[in-house]
Image 1 (tube, rainbow, N blue to C red):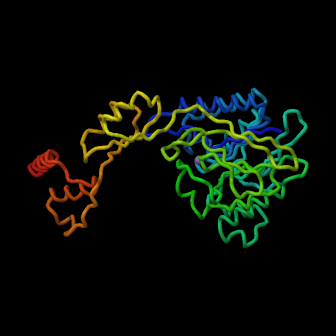
Image 2: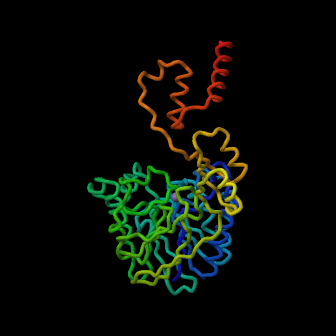
Image 3: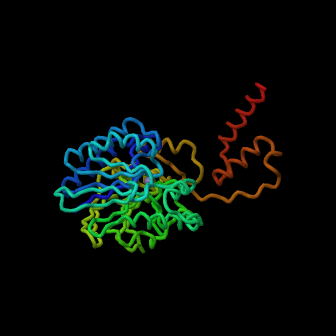
Length: 386
Ligand SMILES: [Mn+2]
């Protein structure tokens, strides 16, 4: 049977206050289009459906539209919550989503208690058994482990405990089924691509790829936004990656979904299908004149701009934004002097010298005469009023 693996939609995420709803709509439209064109039996959505735990209505609308279109095409969906999602909210939505073929596995459950979702192929000839492991925060691992026959050893470390939990889930696999692990977790050695909250991408959370179940036909992962195969996994395993370039840490990443062809008792064959929708994120470097010359060639990309100057240049960020309306971040690029270690504590300096010390620490250069005059003026006014 054929599955479409996608993850980390993060619907509702804005960038520097600018909405990306149109981009999410276009990207989801493409995902649904690929599912239809490829004739998949089911879609596996590996967590971080939404950006925010309390998703705004327009995010719901986009997600529901995608689910309804898949339902109209007779394609089932299995969803797990990621660390950005509210599992409780997805659980509640799941009651309404089940009748349209969207199964929400909102928490970790042992196989015999519903932790494995069964999805038949559309022709009824094959059955996928999807072991669902939503994101488990470290502080909640004990609650998850409690549902299993967990020994003391489960609690030595999160990474080891999760390895044991994955093995317990895989105990529910059957040789005559297409066995899949669907999980939102971080594996050791994954190539990061930004856009993920730092706290959950760290050593304490990193599960050794060797702990992924060897008898899975496929392991469908979410959490890491750069699409990639998991090196060192005993079964075919992939991070599908995010839907859009979500932040400047994801510049240059090509987004995709993964198409999985699987049969019982053998490793799945996988291939990537690119997602072209959504605007690019782009880093732009140059002097103000070079940026002006480049403005015509950047299309509708969201920009992070590094302006080369001789030193601090008040007002230049506004000029850059006039030239490049999609400049979200503007950084000044000039040689910064290492601030000297202060001889006297800053607090004992006169206000003007405090300002100079602060300016040097922020900009790596001395403030201009004009700025100092303005400072003196404001200070004088303040003192007058006091
Ligand atoms: Mn994510």
